[in-house]
Image (cartoon, rainbow, N blue to C red; front, side):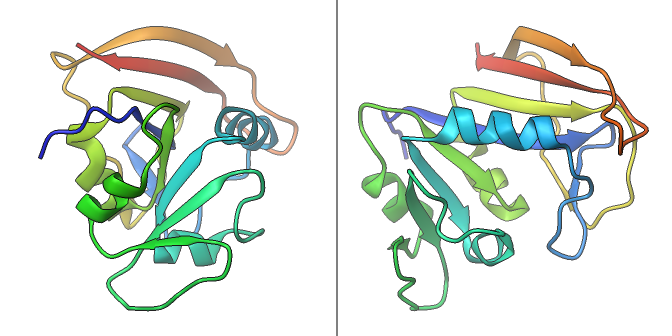
Length: 165
């Protein structure tokens, strides 16, 4: 399947590509959550059902929320999709569509993404969910902004933006 719709992935990953454990994030980085809100507000966000139910606020305000599920279950305030193809059909044709998780959804959308917004956490974590490994022959690092650890965290992180080559 080919798509001309603008698809971006936004994710925070550890050095070992870990992104989650027991359907929860591995860390809390206040600056990263603010960045996520700033980048995705006014756009479409696409997520799996488990990711949707793990959100502290549902649906995410000021965004079109597309939830992909294998269970026929309408969720108030969300656009439901029952396949990757159906989710792509329901995406915005003109503005960024952000894939926000979880692990299976990232893997399925990875071939269609043109931009990756990655928060790289400079530490390894134990996890049960991982982001696909980046093949640097397919991606070009466009931007990297190192960040100092927040008071509550003992690790540094970087904001990275990759474009598909």
